[in-house]
Image 1 (cartoon, rainbow, N blue to C red):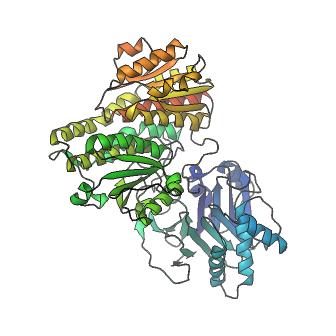
Image 2 (tube, rainbow, N blue to C red):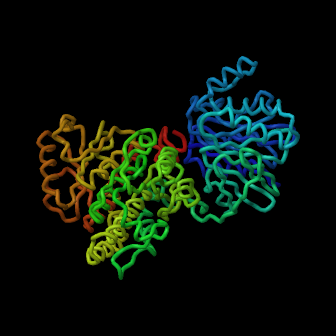
Length: 615
């Protein structure tokens, strides 16, 4: 959540900061701002709302200068107003700060500073942090840039919470100081210029050479050099890496929204997820990044999947896949609950941390907790430079490419594909036959084309969406591996349309849910032809008997359900274990077209951000 960009070089900073910031708007779009050293002091522009509001303010009154910091905000403390937007200044007005994270003890610090005579212009924890830094800077006896670095270290010791910061001071032209504790920061290495950002996506047009700051590291950034140090002030070793994923600038192309573009990219993203990983001769898969031997894989007796939101739903589908293929018990847990709970964990348990960004704070915290308890932890993520990718013992990279739309689509299906690959690998190390493995491999290879067939029904899904767009509430039902697909369909509907939607197992209909059925509440029923098809038809009949409209996700050519449901979202038939991947796609399209019919801001839904880097 929130995005930071800083620049120091020879070019005019304002257009670079605005351009780079626009690439991070998916991280937060409540407000935005920048601060630039203009040769006389720190000059600030900030506006509530989207970055375009800030750009208009800067166009009307440009700032000239070759170094600065900028920020796009997802509000935690204080409403999204001009005054609460970052950057914030210290009491002297010479120090400017942008910040990602949450300062947990800001009220105590604010009270202490207020008693010392400080006054505040905002309701944010970040302004308190700026005043703490400015106070420490004023009291420091150090000289030059060492003075600001010492102030950052001293302030870090006072603060409880997470921080990714970029700081400039008018007394120190040519210097940007960055530091992180729990919130990601990367250095972008240029020629005669350098950058600091919370996400490599911001750096796409400028450089693909980056240094990933480790937790608690501090950087002194100049145009021609940078120095990275530890909390104690000693220099640390750095590694300049070339990043491909996330460095390619994404645009919508011919699509009106990123979400639709990313839905339509799923044939390619699924293909990328399994490319080079299929062993047709052995009826298995190859996942070298697990960093586990065949003997270690055979010793796994239980798997625990950690995730939040869509990532957790993918893990719930993964549970069915792994248990079916490998006969290994799998449990799924909200990462936010695991890290604070005391649930017992069996020996020989493998943990899987699932996160598109690889920076989800709750999931990262849960991974670290599992490692503290001595368990092996693998990551499933889309960003090879992320904290989860770097801190896990191994893992599987999704290769989905940049996902800009806040509502996850292609990352979800890529995660489920990774679970299918992992389930097949574990199954072949246990009792799954080569023939059964080969059948699943054949279905995996055919899946991209079946997704293309599914996407051809987008216009018909749009017509259904227009019919039901003004419903007050929706129910989503599915059984077995399609229950988490129902949860995911409901989540997508909530995220981008703001309609009330709930997902349940179909069999739970009679256990209370049926009280919600009426003619104004459509039910989306996932009823492809699997082992519980007839049971789902029974649920459909119960809904219809009470006057409820039913939208069925069903296989092409299913004449029986055509005569029962009010509307049908069609999908091709595939291997039963892969069918959930196809079944979720019409639900993604359904929520998308419903949001469009309601005039919602599809790619930037209210109150949400793409990467949840705070608790």
